[in-house]
Length: 419
Image (cartoon, rainbow, N blue to C red; front, side, top):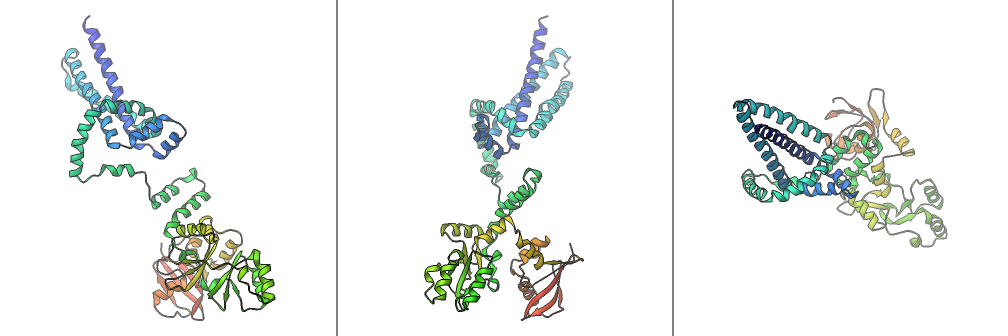
């Protein structure tokens, strides 16, 4: 009769150790698989457990050491107790006990808790943080010793544990992939806008500016009637005012001042007080930086100049916003006119059209690293003035020149011939 309490104590102790092992296994998966962004949101909402979990995750080497020390202690002690149990009560069948214990550990202390923790990692991490934080203090001497040994081994293997702290610091491409994979979690329109914002770091002013040939402005040498017509027909709120050509820009006219400007012009008085100083931007300025420049200088429109100070185009805050939210209203209709889609899945357009706009319209990937317009791409490919009826292939796209005007392509047919 005296043996029965000993048997009960052994079995109870083994069960407790298996539960402890399950806790450590689940905690390891929960901690390592948890999303730090979700934990931060919980911590901001006042959840102390989430905040505690984040503090533990800030030192992943210490956290793993605590978990592994606890898990190995539980499993090894359970194995020792099973050996005692088999020797004392089951005729020394230690091998059988080891096999049974291994199966039990795999099912109940490894697979089950880890699978559960992977399904609810943040909850598991938060709930286990209190116990783990206490154990980290209790196991501190052992952890310090094991970390010293393991850190030396890691140095020999050229492994930098500090880099694990930056594992959630995603770069732009990784954030865009995260957006693409978010599916219904983020509405499609929001995904497109967020993706466009992230893509701004890879764009420069030259990519979206209005080219020099398409700038609408007011020539101070024109007649009053022509100037009135330009102001009336302009879709813009600000127009550059120039002398003979845009390179001689004398200022920017905000249409709210157009009435006073016209009165002064009609009476042949100076118009300087009704126009603002021209503002300039560099061709190569990053779009994100240019947006900040507009804000800091309280400007909404800029003339774009190259490295020699020559005017190459014009950019406005509206152009940057369109890059983020996309074209709308009349701009969509104008783009559909610019790119005439044909029944054979080809498109007919003007040589001055931007490759970037064409890629967006057709979901193509024509390279525009060296040439921003179709004219520039063709000229770079053939290295001479193009002629009508010329047909060539660049990568997987076929370009057929239909019409030439003033040594420039006025009509070209483009088709994707290979995927």
